[in-house]
Image (cartoon, rainbow, N blue to C red; front, side, top):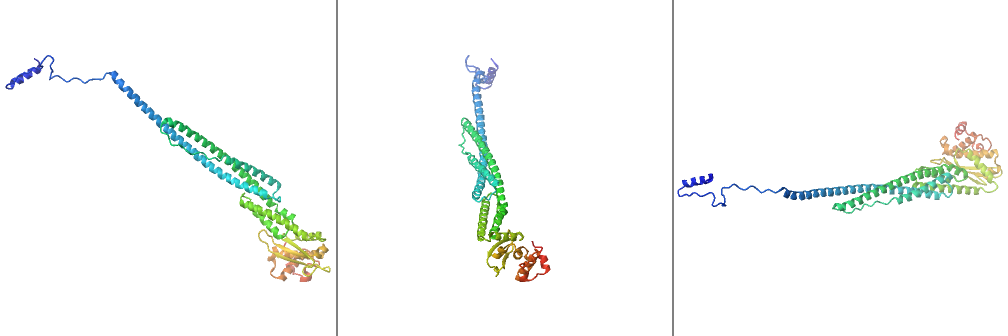
Length: 417
């Protein structure tokens, strides 16, 4: 009997009516007091068969996720790069259009100036240089228009799967390259346009300045033109020179006004010369030239008539002068009217003395502060003193009509030249 059976028998004996039961009912009966069985364990082969596929799936999922994330990031980076390149290209295109518009405006002005130069006002070399610069500008404007295509900024929605992200990313990279190419073309065209604009401005400024500088030569070639037309020419030349810093509507208008002023001076000169036609033509021009040579820059108009101021017949001569103070481009101007007898008797000393007296009135336009110009008597005394200060002592200098002026006035008149 084992220890468990003995313990059971002892317990039964101690309990009244108890029976001792055997530990087993049979040779194969359950042993109620036996220990529990040990847990069942998987064999190594079975474990590997389960772990390896699971690990492969997990590794594949991780690899797929990494590839998917990389593809997504690559697309995002390509999209950002494409947008940045497109923005830069668009900015370059905008600057190019502005630059091309500015150049076109200047070129239009240059073309208009060249077309308006019907009288050959522009110096020949300056005109040639301006024409060449204008031609170059027109070429650069065409180049700018050709380079002014805007980059495409349309992008399809972002794909999800990496096999779609790859081609989409490659397309974005192509768009970025195209945008960069367009930007470079725009930058190059803008550089060329600005260079052409600078050359055009330099040529335009030189041409307009040359025309303005030539204004005195226009005056000398048209010395008989009316003083009003000469003053207008000087003002137009000044305005044109001031506006020559830019090739714009202002410069074009100033040049057009200058061309018109040149034409007016030429027409005025022809008209005044026609008035002098006749037997005394050459003598009249000699008298006028001599008067201008001593007038100190005061502009002189001349009119002629048979009788002036009551004189002109029987060997007499008459003169009359109206003078106007100067301002701005007007140095002062006057109109001298002489009798035909002055030209008939020229260069008689009396005629020279008379003409000098009239020029003495004319030069008051620049020296009126030296005497009381409001007084008629003071005006005649001044003109007589001025003629004497020029060495004119012959009858006609004014003494016979107005008396001898004081020496102090003669001395003062001698300072007005």
